[in-house]
Length: 328
Image 1 (cartoon, rainbow, N blue to C red):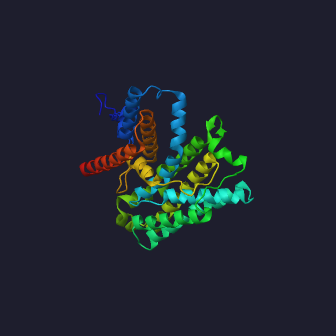
Image 2 (cartoon, rainbow, N blue to C red):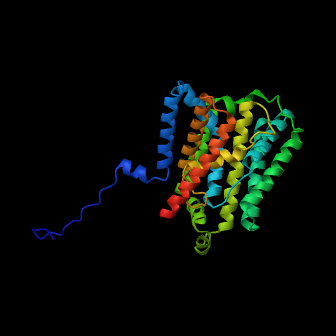
Image 3 (cartoon, helix red, strand yellow):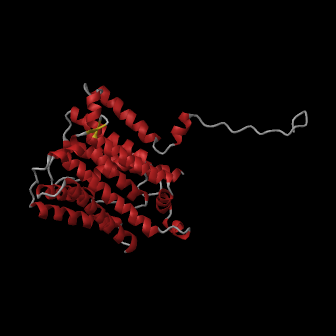
């Protein structure tokens, strides 16, 4: 009660400031790392800090970032998808082959996307309903998809695609390069799914504690199937963008892309054991990887050394993720 007898009104708790909210975000440390890497590259190179270079980084990052969206969903459930590069190559070569054979571009694109989705559903079935380890299932389907791509093309690229197909890799949408626009659209849809729908909450719950999620009534197998289907579909979208950018179907495309996708996810703060992370962090991780590749190329660092650096970064990011999880 106040001195005049009126009931006291409790003061509302102070809302945290924008900086405090940012520091609590799961992508805060990856974002700080991205800024730090950019500052190092600015100091180490002459042409890094330019608009054209930033646009170039965004375009180069787009394909890996699209694949990393599906990889994020798989890792959030405690799984992994190693066949992403091979499925991307198979989808891209099928699109190219059908268009060269005379099929309308829209039909070729639809079939290529459908093949990626089918491989994802196949992975999801064996993981979710057959109870097989994701690493074994996707390792097997990686070999199957790569073999099918090589058989279909005879091991040679497919050229002679219609000029209209170039839009997806070389065109612009409202002044934004199409690969970048597609990347942003895929991330926006993934953000809505993971952060603003019950499906997203179930995906996080499965990765956090699968048995607890099952006992709570979550249909674990169904959502695992969905996760791998999404991963296969995003691989096919990446194959569409890459094929359009190169204007050819490359059966050997995507080799070791699974490493880059996993690096983007882990560098973005997603726990490799599942249950923690964010799709925004994956975008930050993909950008960090792109900045690192771009800066190292400018500095003349050998691609072989770059692979070593990326491997060390993955190990370090996983170590940090495990230490943070132990503290919690």
